Length: 137
Picture 1 (cartoon, rainbow, N blue to C red):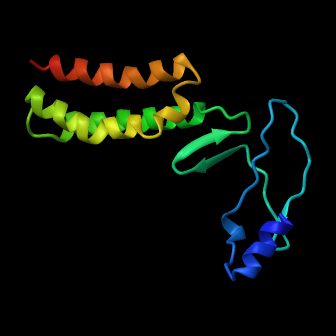
Picture 2 (picture 1 turned 120 degrees about the vertical axis):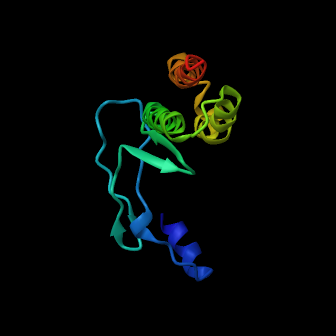
């Protein structure tokens, strides 16, 4: 941490310590007590962290992230079915591909290899939306 501070001082780049957290990666249940300081401020130790839109925990699992994106995608899909004036299946499918699919697929290469259950959660949103679209016929 001192080297990071020295580097930022040398290049006159301020580090926003208020935006910094510490995530201790471990497969142990017990949390270690470790005090990390940056800019003479102690960094809070967190259980999960969001980096580039992907939420991971201290065991490098993405359950929280997948639950979050599944909920967001379900909400968007429901809004499409509720708010779109057209009930035309091709139009609804295009809306799904434009608004829902990117939410489900963003950074999926990071977490998709971890668990089949996570992939199934994601696929349920797609299946439910397709079923809802074609059940209107």
